[in-house]
Image: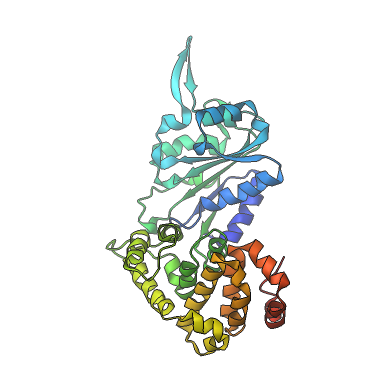
Length: 368
């Protein structure tokens, strides 16, 4: 099966949305199989001038509004097949006179409206037992369910884990798989870094992943430790908040989110960070030239953290970056720019030193 990174996955989603061909994406847990579609379809809805809505996050009153004005909304409906039985798809039988009619769930009724536009996303499809997968055949194959035709404006996609991810999956029947275009999503450090730095993930965790690439996704060998996923790293960032990353409490927070192995390695990064004397670094930017590679990752994470806390430090940070090896200078600037695009642009366009010392990095860093 062809493997795609996040950028390629995003592009394929757009193509399949235009043609309305079903897409199945497999891959390990927590790497963005469901998060990426939300971003892609949010952008599509915005370009169409429609309001993007997640069906499962709407109240009963909000659903009534959706039913009244379907042409104003782009609805993303996440249906976890692993948590369903057959009636959750086809509906509960109801006797109407001498005819037994299905009473379908509200999302089926909504997407049967010809004006309805959006996406039906069957997540965890291969965790569902075969009888439930079989009930999904009709909506995927024939675009109809409970004797109702799904709107031509609705795209159907699905996602599932791999057998090697210890997810206790069921094999998808060939007739069902054959209806999908298929690919596998893999964790890509560069793409994840770009996303994470734009979504308020701790610059220290990002710098650590740049240092130890294999820890972006790490499957525990014998379940003795928690496996690490991009989703877990984001959770660790939320738990850390403004916590001192070198504290024992921070180590505990990272451990429960990503596992002890990840936390132990992250503490090595924290040790390098704790040894940094920022007064000396800012007073003598050339001092970083003598730093080891391991320490440079901590410097990059620290500079980004300081900029995100106060973008007015930009003019003190640039001389330091100009003395760092190119790969670390680029990493620092990207973390800063993605984390605070407005502040970065405002300071960079006014900084003579930025263009004087770092003009050669223009091919990597664009000041829009």
